[in-house]
Length: 98
Image (cartoon, rainbow, N blue to C red):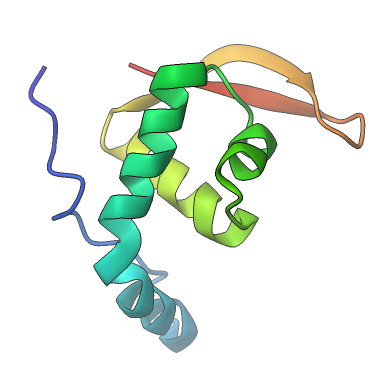
């Protein structure tokens, strides 16, 4: 499979939202390396929930989750169709690398 360049793909923003655009522009220089960290963790230890990725990477939810969403959009991460319990007892999707 041809793997997209994780460093070149720009983070999306919500149309019409100045704060979303500002956040996307601020994270852009680091987004590729952060995406790579999320993908590397999933390849090494997946499938994992977002919470498990956040704990494993010591990454905030507002940084990790958008990177995982971007990896899904790039076709590199998939929903396994399975869930597991989070620390709070709620069900969460298990994500896997392709």
